[in-house]
Image (cartoon, rainbow, N blue to C red; front, side, top):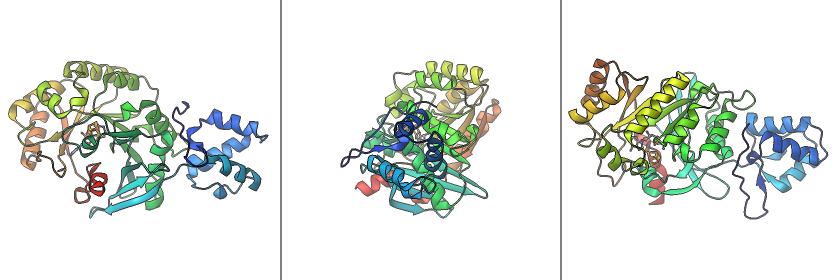
Length: 354
Ligand code: SAH
Ligand code: SF4
């Protein structure tokens, strides 16, 4: 378990979030309080497995210990600011943390499954031109506990086991690498949420040194990369935050990722009318993906209020999938879920700020 490097204190009593402690730090704390070693395991299970929001719920701890802990520590947790339910059953939440910072997350149920889309930062500093989150800039990175707490919130609201998590909410996970990995590990752990690593997906705008680092992690987490254009000039204009990492370098880094892990990464490509949907763009995309291990997700652009970008037609999306298939590249059109509930992350937060 990697130590969580971002501990935050609440303003009034200077209490620390207990989720900011690593397992070892928690053990040390309890031993220091004269408690038997098994207490750490009990508390660990209450906060990560069961996800309780108060020390009083830790019924197998002595009352005096619960009171001492409550004086010095908090359990993080989230409070609901707003939510929207889609006709397709998915639900979007605007959650606030102890310091008032808000983030969005989404629960997407299907049959027996429940996938959560969670945020890794409040806002984002990457400035992608088509993204509602990018427009508002970065507020701050989230701790591992705060990333995890979003999943707990959705699980408890649906009353259902979470079967997958995609870090495709607000923020750039690889600009908050350590906390993202610590959260993924807790989501994966049998004494955490117990979600299989392959069902835990990180989406990055393409921060190359972190893609390389991610490829060396021992777990089989899934990687998605936001491509949006295989033409340098177009990509630079759409995604100025990753201008310094050329497509050529991205191509090489992804090749290394596939060689090292044997896993198939996904490229996300939101089709924007008149920007990245031309035949020339499609040819470049085919060339970028041909003969590589990858899957392309063609996404319908979610319209962001005040943005000049329009989604391309559904027929154009089908053209893309057909042409990619003709050169041996697997591609699908990602069903846009919750299109009626401001589903592009950042939209609900942006709307409430207006
Ligand atoms: N920062 C990461 C993850 C969060 S964004 C990243 O960029 O990959 C999650 C996905 O939503 C990314 O693929 C992003 O490009 C896409 N996205 C952002 N705004 C969108 C919009 N208006 N319509 C469709 N997809 C959008
Ligand atoms: Fe940040 Fe991803 Fe939005 Fe770009 S698309 S601004 S990287 S959240």
